[in-house]
Length: 236
Image: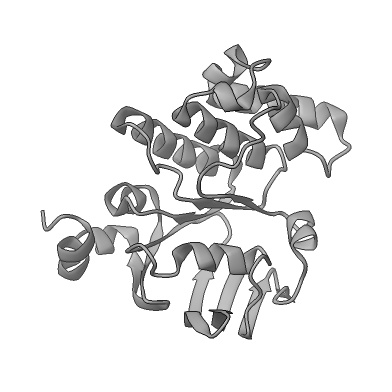
């Protein structure tokens, strides 16, 4: 469904991605793990068209989208939930969700999807008229994910969804990611520093180091890989 072919991305003269190659099949949860500064978020920003690659190709459903503008990539169904949530703090929960569906005009389906995200996160239903900026960090992450779902993504890009959350909320977020994938068949590309949870959630994983993929395998195999255990799973 989605393929990076030798993609290199730069910030000025600094190379952030180095001949990156990876594949995501339809209906998979694929995770990209690695240390801070490895290039994980840059991978998502490159895919979203925010930071265009200098070389290589990105293929989505047999179409070259390497140099597509971000708005066109969104229209094609690739939706990013950014690191740090970036909700609209002065708009209500309801208004944030409405903006997630701004490209759609199927009113009944929008209503159905709204009820669906409220079933995923009942706390948002309770706070639907509350300003986004007054929500807790966990509630804002729920809102960011729900806003992404309101766009009816074919591929949902999640950038550090557990960042800064209490452990009980981290577990809820990952449970919900699995639920979204299972119920809707949504393809999910997950960038996450919590390697243990990410690999327990995903079907397949890639390990990134200084802009390069150094390991690729099923998530189950990566969980038992000595190198991954030593570097990312606390040596347990």
